[in-house]
Image: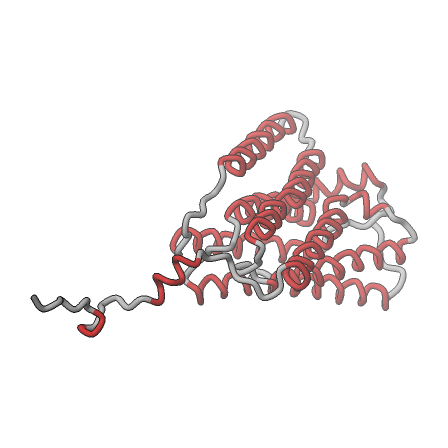
Amino acid sequence: MASWNSIPLEITYEVLGWTAFLSWSISFYPQVILNFRRKSVVGLNFDFVLLNLTKHSSYLIYNASLYFSSAIQKQYYEEYGYGQMIPVAANDVAFSIHAVLLTAITLFQIVIYDRGSQKVSKIAIAIVSVVWLFAAVCFLMALPTHSWLWLITIFNSIQVFMTVIKYIPQAFMNFARKSTDGFSIGNILLDFFGGVTNYAQMVVQSIDQGSWVNFYGNIGKTLLSLVSIFFDIIFMCQHYVLYPKKNAQVSPKLIEEDREPLVKSSDDQPQSEDV
């Protein structure tokens, strides 16, 4: 098993890793707090949350399995060489656990708070169902030969796939409403910073080892950072450039009705004419 060649690079690696963990973990709270304060989840795309829960659950299975299982680590070394380092750090496992918990809380908020006319689409439900059915089939295929590295690689691929598609419903919803009202930009800014530091952590490890194996040995972590950064830039452009300080469109009729008093005064009653 490989060890660090440079103490400063090892320290930098740990600092970047836990910085990514803090940034990504804190990024969940602005949306949760916003939902709590508004007692509403209108503006938050429900497909995004459901797909996100599947994504983080898959990533947790991959990270925890590779980090804690000696059998899977042995298979990894046989595949990529005993001179390589395991591409999963403690901060990756901690982040995945926290992400699943906070995403589940957000999903619970969708259940208890005002949803307006929004609902989870049938397409999202179908995607999640097919993904977990596919994962179950892969588990049954890996069971006879104990191909655990192959199996968790499937889960890693699932989280990449879910990362790619989970942002699309929210981005399209912002575009359709011409507004980011109800969707926390604080979440995006922290997510962007987490993606940058997560990618930088992998670069530091590669520099120390003189090898780029960890990038394709854990392609899921690599693509997680790049895809997150890409969509975060889109959301920042929507919030600050395309739809700055705009609320969801409300019809003039509703605005006028909202201004009318619930009970009219006697002065407002029509006067009857004397005969």
